[in-house]
Image (cartoon, rainbow, N blue to C red; front, top):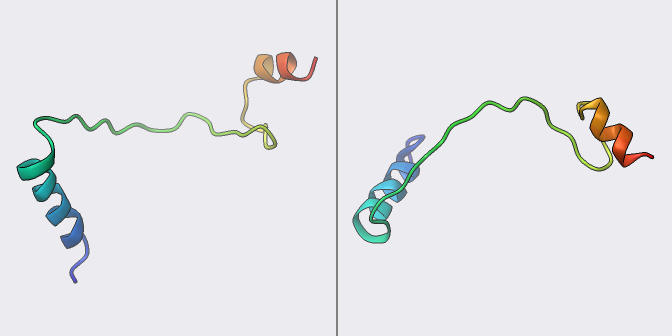
Length: 51
């Protein structure tokens, strides 16, 4: 199966059968952190969390 073919089939099926309308938003991540990996977390966030 060609790359992207399945995705296009799903998009078409969704358009025809599942959704009257939809919105897609593409964004860029500014930072990523978890409760255990805080390297990219804002300093004020870490300060509050670790009081």
